[in-house]
Image (cartoon, rainbow, N blue to C red):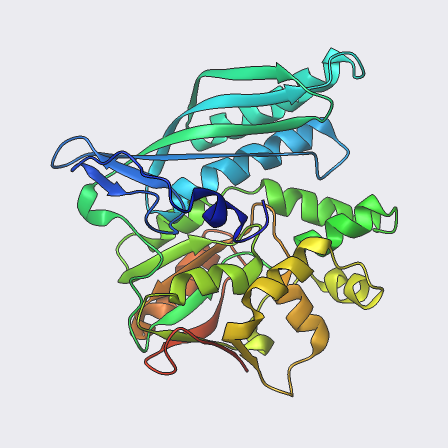
Length: 328
């Protein structure tokens, strides 16, 4: 759903309340959190989408990794999942669905997650994803807006998956690009989440459909802070530059730009292709971690030790201008 559409649909509705609800619909966080005891809270999230690669097994892997990511972004550990399936049974062989489900199961096993059920419907358009429940201590929840002036921002996966996927749909992507982006999207954010443990991390989110700038915007709104993104430090899939120059920028990137560009200031020295990629909607993107600047280098080193080679400091939190994004 395009950014802003859900907010408009929900406007004016009265939601049930509960004193144990820690994170709910009143904020733009990655998942809901409900306190069970003084030491245990559950994280709940759901995500599903249409295929973004041709291989059904890898589509299952990517969809599962994407759904699990919100729990990692909140600092939690995913424990259970339920399948969500829409399948055109009259037009597609059931073996395709079996491969999708196997891909999802293998990714859940990798994450240590148990499949406990699910729901399927017949639909003209294939869709797959998960509803996920995770655990966290109520005092250890990572939210988006707890920014501190002077903090550093670390990104754990390169940008450009939306542009590469657009090239794939157009039959223009190289085999190398297809293989790289497929494995990248199927990669869990588990190791990145584990690397954060013990570091003074103040906020976190994962980069998905709203693009880097869209998710940064969710962090700064009502936070009392601004953010400066250093364009030359942002990890980007190399082929994304070439495909963006060919005009293979997905429609979602233009929607993301239209929705957020009023709060963004881009320095004249920043290349247009980089700006396009910063608005590019990501599938199963990396974590954006807000950490005390003194610990940023050590956290990047820890991420690299875990095989997250492209992890990089890409910006900083500003005291001023408030609720603005500077791209320098």
